[in-house]
Image (cartoon, rainbow, N blue to C red; front, side, top):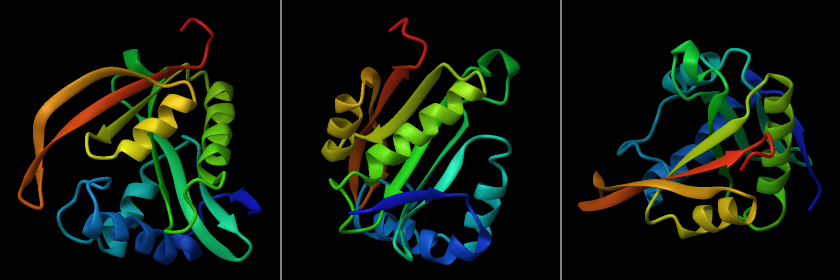
Length: 166
């Protein structure tokens, strides 16, 4: 499929929110227990500041979205960012995620970000495999800290060094 990354724009928010809410309602990939509203979603995206972000397009359709956000508001962590990426059903395993990751890594390097962290549900094997194939390594696991759909789940932290000191 032919994917491209465009800047986030409010006109894409409803389609992006539908992608996100699919995971809220059907998986452990998105942590909220209830669907998000457009107001909450818009505030989240507006809070990203200068961190890289984009909407993943396939033709005229939103195939997903991805962004980096600060790991911590403290300046001592300014070189570390946390990644978020959600792909629409039917767009996983087709290169959209790899394109988004490459875009975010390039933009991160321009901003002096040297480490990217990914917090992933322990039930999300696909995301852990994807991140592992793209240079992330597991660096921590919080056991049973989440509770969704009546089931406890781990949160697995993975990291990638962008500055070749891995």
